[in-house]
Structure formats: C-alpha cells, structure tokens
Image (cartoon, rainbow, N blue to C red; front, side):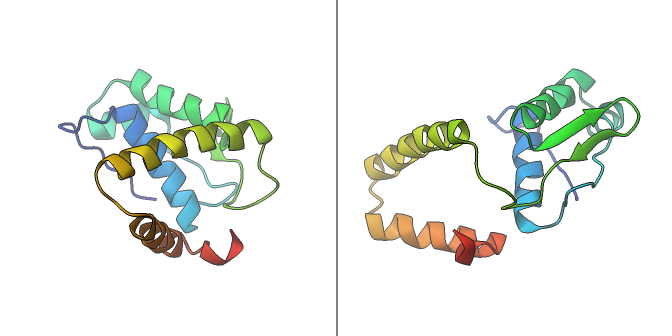
Length: 131
C-alpha cells in the first residue's frame, strides 16, 4: 500500500491517510492481517506530526477497520466486504451519503450521472457485483 499526502489540500492530513487506507482495503491492496507503518515512521516519511497519523489510525480503529496492538502495531482487521455491516455504521453512512447527494443535486448532477459515477467507482473497487 502506497500512501501519499497533499500538504496543500483543504482535506486534513489525518483524513487523507484514513481515506487512502480505506480505499486500499476496498481495492484489495491491503488485506486482513497486513501491517500498517508505525505512526512515527509514517509521520517521519511525510514530515508531519505523529499525532496526525495517530488520529487517522484511531479513526480507523474506532470504525473497526484496524486493530492496534503494542507488539504488532496497526494491522488491518477486516477484508473488504467481510461480515455483516454494523447498523450504526449503515445509519451514519446513509447520513453522509444524503449530504453528498444533496451537493450533487445542487451542482446540477442528474440521478443518471450519480448512478453512472457510483457504478464506475464501485467497478474500480472490484465490488460492484457484491453490493
């Protein structure tokens, strides 16, 4: 898994790291049991504060995506699409999706545009058929 950050982006660095880990899992590039770089190593590689990486990892841990162990560090906890989704996750995801769909509507995307773009992105994750 190759992580990068854009220091000039308006998206916070911890969010960029979190998002890239999730995308790597969704694409199958990171699988259950794979280790993530240590917070200190990743921070040093990017030239950022290790607390920033720690915040990204903590969000992933809270979402059940990784587990953090003193001996093994941060490790991917689940493969993409494994197990039943947590109802609380589904409710929060739907809330965020509603906002994204509202933004799309405000900016003139049609329902067909949104569906086509969703299909395209799901195909990139290789999971279009399982949803």
